[in-house]
Image (tube, rainbow, N blue to C red; front, side, top):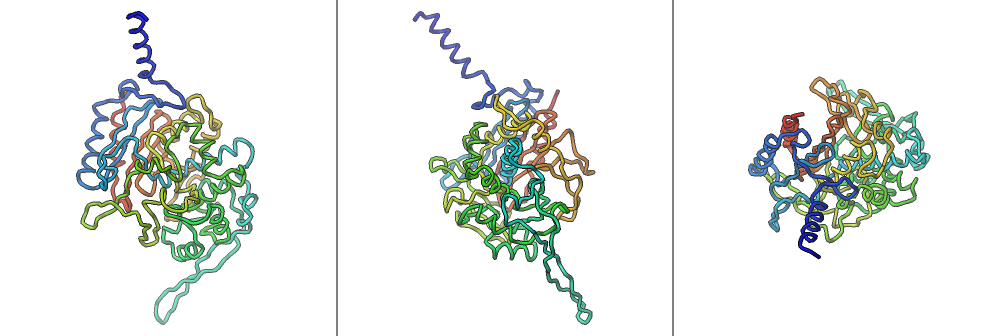
Length: 439
């Protein structure tokens, strides 16, 4: 081959690997200016993350910004571990906990698109243990002599079945043990109900069937109560598809979107890429959490359950691990209204439903009004008004966050690993990205 031909071949190969291509296997990278952002202003994110790490507020963090389907910022800061000493990497794997919920909702909506379920189907149609639900009603007793109040509880028929829609919008009346709500914590603990955050014996189906026999906090459809609804949905997917939930997600979601590092339980060759979990050290800083399962009040969680333990419980509400890049691929599919890289996962109208407030302003377990879409919340201003066009966000138990502005085709992801967490670095992150928009 002549010198000129060789040179042309080298140039062609170089261009092939350097030019971003939208496909199921790649996520293009470009300069911020190419999509209407300022590199100078985005660079200020570095300062926020470095200060948080250097002041011992977090152990490490990965931040990612994508706009118009292209990554413009993807950096890591701090440590992913200290024993052994390893710096954080852009491809570090994180426990995403409740960021599993939008993925589980997507699995359910796949079945909905295929006509295999209807959102107003009663859950008992697929899981009989949820037939004839009851609610737990608190009864107050006042003793005039001692001027004291005591409480007991009674069961009442819910008079309404839980539907798939109730599960998707957290209006089912099912809660979480870790909120420490009096009596529910005991009921859930006695029944062996797992929040999906620690080693759990048995399968999700076995636990969900037990959960179906327990009382509800509210009548389905009457109030927003955050809880194990997505774990029930994970088992529902198994029942309807006749495929284990982990295999369904791998075949129908992760492989389609080229999410190569998202699992319930890590393969042995990827355990080293899982970030350590950090916790307060009692003196204003943080320390690495041990691998042993922990009890903290009503909380039960573990740093090691994604690689140590039974590995049979696929929690749709809190069980996944992932990377910033993998999760960006998932969110890009939502921005694109159901497809990415030429692969369609959901119908456009289905994604529109998923990213629109489905419950208005409903009473909530926290005593305030609440709105919710399917698997995510809508971003609101200080007056409670929804911002932009269907802007949405969610986060995870171990301090992971995402925010999406579909109108600007903007994705923001911040992943750290800290519990309990009393920091809000994500607010500065979001603000800096907003300030960087120039178009």
